[in-house]
Length: 77
Image 1 (tube, helix red, strand yellow):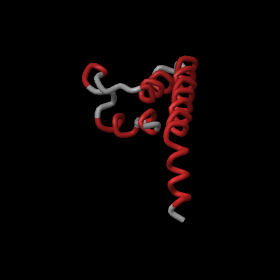
Image 2 (cartoon, helix red, strand yellow):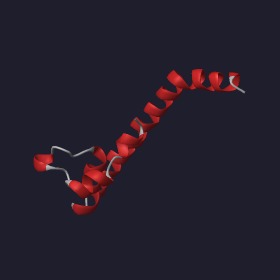
Image 3 (cartoon, helix red, strand yellow):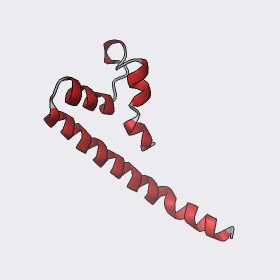
Image 4 (cartoon, one colour):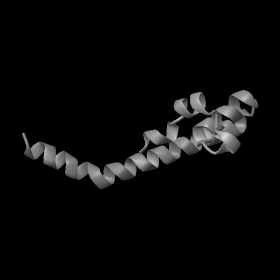
């Protein structure tokens, strides 16, 4: 789930954002703004947003599922 935030390579290679930006994701938008339009400020803001959302999702998923998985693994030993 967290890895899907940076799902850039396949979309860029296959569609480059797709017809009428139908498959544009934040990582692709960050690339296009930063390296094709030379707008490093907005690209950096998108990168910070991606990091914060990814961190929040990772912490949420760890809180929801981390304790149960670690206790069940310890009981199996």
